[in-house]
Length: 119
Length: 111
Image 1 (cartoon, each protein chain N blue to C red):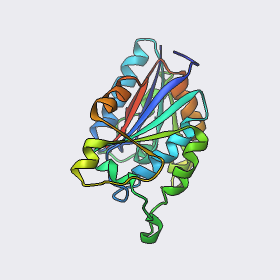
Image 2: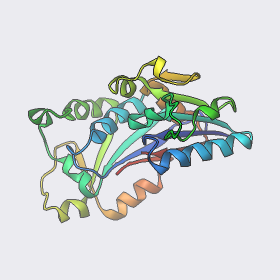
Image 3: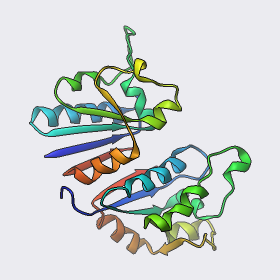
């Protein structure tokens, strides 16, 4: 496996504002693309709140939008679990977020070489 | 085998002790072990001379050849600098973490 393309998955299960773990996860995801890594992010459980367009700077929190805007340039794909979205009545996600069924989300996890879960 | 750990938890968490013990065991078995400390995990690299110290004992791993590095950014924003840390800890970046993840045969995260 050494030196080969690796599929990395970061799972985010927390809301955008409670801790710095989400902005840090997003910062880490960009850094992880530097080497031969294909990085994806899965928003699940309360993590799907990060699929909304938010303005953390208005309450003095680190701004996650800066990281989000770099994702397409870095080839990072962001997925949101449809079941979690439905449970929270979230009907509209930010444009770059792709919705996944629970089965597809499980497939994404199973197909990853490394999974880092922020819970 | 090259084994990497990512640790985000401070010494009061069991995860810190689990990582230390796993790293210790893998090093004893002859594996090449690297530990990357990030977020509150950087507190595991702080020198602590308190008699009842709260520590997982990562300093004991250095002599076994375990490489211990921390995220410079997350250490700095916590006010931690080189003099606060035990010898042998390297200041690294997300670039180095990316390289570590890519090169490891097994990578285990405790975040």
